[in-house]
Length: 442
Image 1 (cartoon, one colour):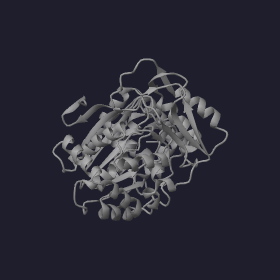
Image 2 (cartoon, one colour; image 1 turned 90 degrees about the vertical axis):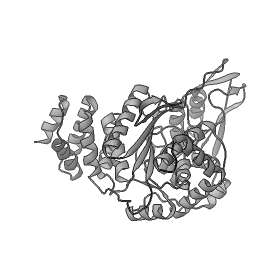
Image 3 (tube, one colour; image 1 turned 30 degrees about the vertical axis):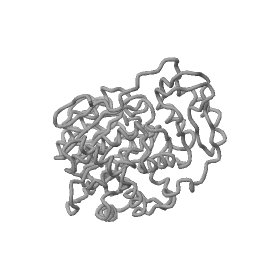
Image 4 (cartoon, helix red, strand yellow; image 1 turned 180 degrees about the horizontal axis):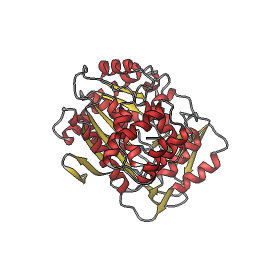
């Protein structure tokens, strides 16, 4: 079958066979199918969708386009966590050392930030010297030695996904559940994991702003994982305000380190403990999520999780002195306070707007090759439900850019809605999906 016939078939809403999907994906990878035909194919999938069988085939073909890591010589149940990304979501930095300290190996392949959501790799690389581009052999060595490793997607891991993702980003075909699912799961299944915990965000600052679409994505990811013989738990969590207080790469490292040293940032640590509890349970070190959460809290209080993070930074080439002395980091040129002009309560914080402003300040990228300023970002001084008086700081932002200060101040001020009445706090963890089905998180 010719590529144009496969495009036409999907354009007309018909189901593709595994051979047809394979011909297209492998043809694009080896260069026999050009960008313009792959763009048309992706747009056809975007509009017509794929059924579950097609999505499984796409995932399997992308998974097998590269190296599938074998971690069977490392003892224990290997468990990872994936988040669909949100503003201020630095959970991986805190959670990975916690779970590893509980005796569960954590092999983690993470992504970069694009658009308004931050990426774990960019956060880690804000630590001077930290290397995320390890080879598969180095990746296996680090996890065998300390029980945790955090790297980026290598050229050997799901190369079809890497090439297709770059094209999806510039052809407005990112927000497609079959394409998102195959992209996420091909990478996760290639890591060598036995189990996976999924954090699917919903709300203003999320990739999927509508709950129904977030639920559909979570169900698809969960079912793909089960189909490939993995133990999976998925959560749907709120992203209507930034998670924690810090937004921006080094700022989020600072907040993560402080949390590992025992600081309680309520929303951030509640979510971290629930996800860690689920990972510890799937890793066979607890009989329930609740028991896993208690173990997670214990390794933070004892300092073990912080020590594990120090070892991770050391093993991956980072300069530990910046973690042990956070104030050693270079300061940005500007630090500007945004103050409230009203008395009342913080009723809403537009997470999407906060994310966009952080990108303007230099903390994110709008194109893959944009250079990030690790110092840039925002620290919230108030969260939803907090009382505020006129003249009190709502946030402080950091940047080296002179030309964005005025607009950043205006937009950040408008991202906070102040009302006389206290709002009802949004439920942070909305839904759990596991072997018992879909239900509200208690």
